[in-house]
Image 1 (spheres, rainbow over the protein chains, first blue to last red):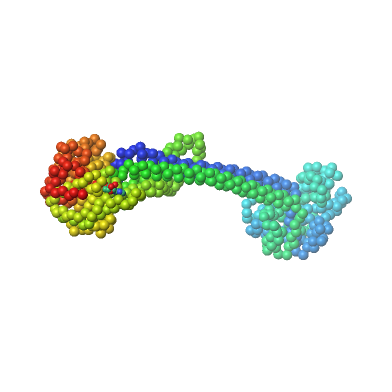
Image 2: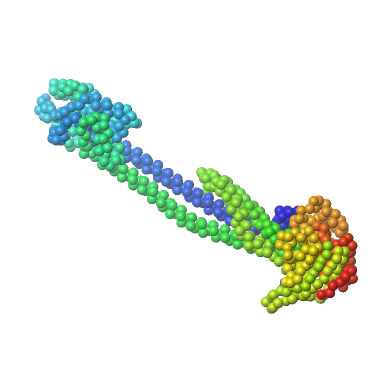
Length: 426
Length: 212
Ligand SMILES: Nc1ncnc2c1ncn2[C@@H]1O[C@H](COP(=O)(O)OP(=O)(O)O)[C@@H](O)[C@H]1O
Ligand SMILES: [Mg+2]
């Protein structure tokens, strides 16, 4: 015969008392796990809200980017690359560069792995007399966009002009009553009007865009260009001009690079601002949720602690009652030659069994609860999201430990009983 | 195996002052003796018995059993000594309510593992005429049966000294007789029985009396 035999027999004899203790453990475990479930569910909800918000922001960013692309298309480019030795005063005064550079420069640039620039547009511009209509115009030869070799393909920002085609600035087609499909003559050369631009309120209004090769022939500048327009789209760096200059001059040494006054830049900055605001907003949501969580935590910690303490107090009381009922047993066990520690073990074994079975019942109850209400309360939440196996193991250890702690004092007092006092007949 | 008591005194300090339960007692008991210790209620019989049984430390004096001074042993040694040598019987039986008779008889095997414990318990049940009750719990037994269970339990580890505190206190004459016969037989087999009692009938059965 051993202690475990005695313990099990005693438990089955004092069923009600034992079940009350077990109920206390179960209540405490259930509370702890339920609070854990609730906190997990709250976290999951937070994640969902933040994810939704982030998705919204991403969508909004994409929308802004698209909008910007559209706007930028109308606004033109914002970086000029001019030939080596070009006097900028002259450019500002005349609106174009007098020096030229090989057209191959743009190909060279396009083949480089430059990341700051996304769109390249070579041009050959010259102010000429449109003697057919007796006025001064800007003749601009463009080749359309040169695709970059590296990086993701981008939607072109400018539509090329076909050979023999021309696009007219607002002032020109408006005053001469020209429209798409009409034929015009420039320097004895015939062009078909491919497009008429809207009013822009700048020199563009008196410009004519033609195909680059047409311009090169007309201006006698075969394989030459006098500017490359480039749109840099990565506006993240504050000193973006220095950044782009460094990159470009490494590939095309000697070229002069200036930044055009740019509404696109303002747009990009607005977009950056919007992004920062959105990030701030998400951060503030997270912060708010974490404050809420802290409050919830405080409340649930208090509740849990209170219930655990109450359960422990109740178990201590029940164990005390159990000891009181069993003093005669303690006396005889000592009389037949058992030691004091054996008595302690006898009562602690009971606490261990109570703790483990209480925890098991509690966990099983909650799992049952989960499956019963899986559709109503826990929709889309997996049981393993709510608690994992390590936590179950921890509970199965913590519950008997706390039960033992609660039972310790009465059990210890039982082991300290004076057998003489118990066994003396009064 | 002999029991030697020298200058044994036990006092208790209570809120009402010091109570002297046992004062300066000396005696010696040899193997095979069945001794009755008697005196009026409150004269210190139970106190003396518990001191003899290594469960209560005397204030002064010594208890030597088989040459071993009980209270010079440490707790563990004394506990083991008790399991090895002493059996107790009380007026109140002190049976364990949730164990059946068979399990109650073999209760001492919790303290000291013995080979063939089950068989030994069955044997003792037979010896004390309890075979029919072996799977019953104590609450269903008569007082006579209860005391026989307590006696069987006391003999389970084959002690050399039996200590009985008013063993017939709750029994009728017939059942007292049965218990007293078993004591006599235990002494005849070479053991020592020390029975404290104020029961005149029980005292008739003993070979030697010590008055307190
Ligand atoms: N633990 C104790 N504290 C105080 N007084 C005690 C204690 N145990 C016994 N006594 C006293 O010692 C005396 C002897 O008691 P006891 O040995 O039980 O007598 P008996 O068994 O002969 O009736 C009594 O007066 C009793 O009140
Ligand atoms: Mg007494």
